[in-house]
Length: 598
Ligand code: GDP
Ligand code: MG
Image 1 (cartoon, rainbow, N blue to C red):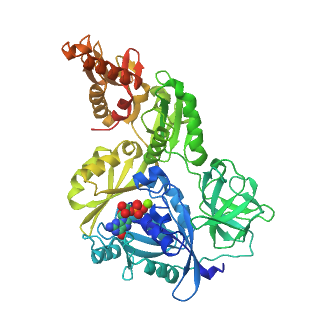
Image 2: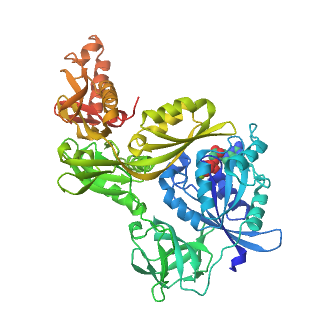
Image 3: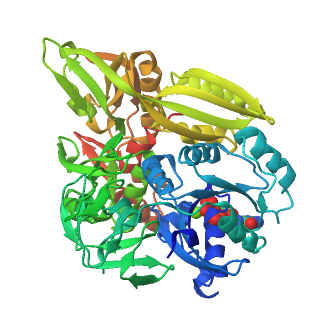
C-alpha cells in the first residue's frame, strides 16, 4: 500500500466512554464482520475483560474504507489497554500511530484517564480528532463537553465529531475525519528494516504472535530477523493482519501495521518496544523509547490445599506464557507451606491474575499482603538490597537507610467531593502539589508513597466520591522513609502472610485496624485468642477473641437433628477453607479482608 493511502490511529478514552463500541462500529461499517458476527464485542475477547469492561491486551484491526474522494484507504485501528498498570504498552501502541480519536462521553465529560491519555498522545505528536459519544443519552450535553475539551485539554473541538456508537450515528463522519485529518505515516522503504514490537501474545495454534509497526524497510515472510534488545534471531514464517479475522500476507511495507510469527515459544522472549531488524542487513540504531517493564507490586500466592501446589505451578506457568509482565519464583513459608512470590505491574494486574487462577484453573488461593519494592542500604558497608517480601526484612539495626517508591497522582473530581478526597490523601502521607478548578471540577495533584496506594486507595476514592473521582498515576522515584516491619501475632504466633512494611507514623493506626478486623474475621475457638500487632518486640495494638462454649451444637437447643447435622457439615465445609496457625484456624477470606482499611 502506498504511504498516502495508510492511516494508523488509536482510540483514547476514559473507561466506559465507548471506545470498544466505537471500534466495533468502525469494523462493522467497513465490512470487516457481518452483523451476526458483531453480536459480541470483538475487541474485548477475554471473559474477565468483558465483565470488567476493560481492554487488557492491545488488539489491532485493519479496515478498508472507500472514502468520499473515491480512493480506498487502509486504516489500522490500534486498540490500547485502558488502565494505568499497562502504561508502557499504551505508550508503544501510541508510538505506532500518527493520530488518535479522543472519545469523550457526552454525559460524563472529560475524566482523569482521558487527560492522562491525551497528554501521551500529544507527546507522540498525534493529530487528535475529538469524538463526542453517547449523544443519544438524555443527559448528553455535547456543547458543554465541546467547551470542556477546549478549556481543559486545550484542543480545538469546533469540528469534533458527534456520535452514538451504540445506535450507529456519526460513524461515517468519524471515518472521513480519520482520512482527511490524520496524516499518513512517513518512512524510508529502501532503508534497512526497522519494525517496532508493539505487543505479543501466545496463541495455541500460531505460537507467539507479534504485533509490529514497520518504521523503515520491508518485513517479509521467510526473512531472517533480529530483535535488537534481546539479541535473538528468528525466521519469519507468517506475515499478516487482522480484519479482524486473520489475513495472511507476503509482506508488510513501511508504514504498515500487522503481525508476524517466527516459531517463538514464549512471550517472555519478546520485549514490547524492541526493534526488529533484518539479521543480514541490520539497522545501525534501534528505535527510541525502549524500556524493560518491571513489576512494582509483589505478593505471595499459596494454595489453600497444600496438595494443589503442583497445579498452581502449572497454572501460573500457563498464564505466564501469555503475559511476560508478571514474574514468579518459589517461596516457602512456615505457616503457608509452598507457594510463589509473584510480581505485578500494579494492583489491577494482580487481581486479574489472581482471578484467572481462581476461575479458569479452579484454585483456592491465599494471597499475602501486597508489597512494593523497598531499597535498603545496610550498615557497615553491607551493601544494597531490594526488598520484595516483608518476611525478608533484615534486622533493624543492620539497616542504615530504607527508601520506598513514590508516585505522582492526578485526581479529577466534582467540587463537592474535594474535602474528603484531600483528607484521604493527607491520611496516606500525601504531599499536595497542585490544585486547580476547571469548569466546576477540581484537579488535584499529590505525591504519595506507592505503599499507601496499593491496598485500597482506589476503592476508597471511588466510595467517598460516589464513583465520580478518577485517578491516574506514574512513578517518580525512591525517597527515604521511616519504615518498619509490623508483624501480626495470633495466639502469640507471627502470621507472616499478614506482616507488612509500614511507616512508623501510621503504624499504630494500621495495627489497631488490623487487630480489630481480625477479631471479627477469625471465628471463636475453645480458648481465648490474643491478636497483636508488633514492631520488633514491642506490641502496638491488641485485641482478644473470647473463648467459645464447648459444644457448638448446644446452640440448637437439643431436638432438631437435621439442623444439628447441617451445622456440623457447615463447619466441615468451613474447615477446608481454613489455615491452621498453631492451634488457631484462620479462614482464607481473612487474609485479604484484613488488609482492606476501614
Ligand atoms: P470502553 O470502556 O471505552 O471500551 O467502553 P465500551 O465501549 O465498553 O462502552 C461502555 C458502555 O457504554 C457499554 O455499556 C456500551 O454499551 C455503552 N455505550 C457505548 N457507546 C454508547 C453510546 O453511543 N450511547 C449509549 N447510550 N451507550 C453507549
Ligand atoms: Mg473497552
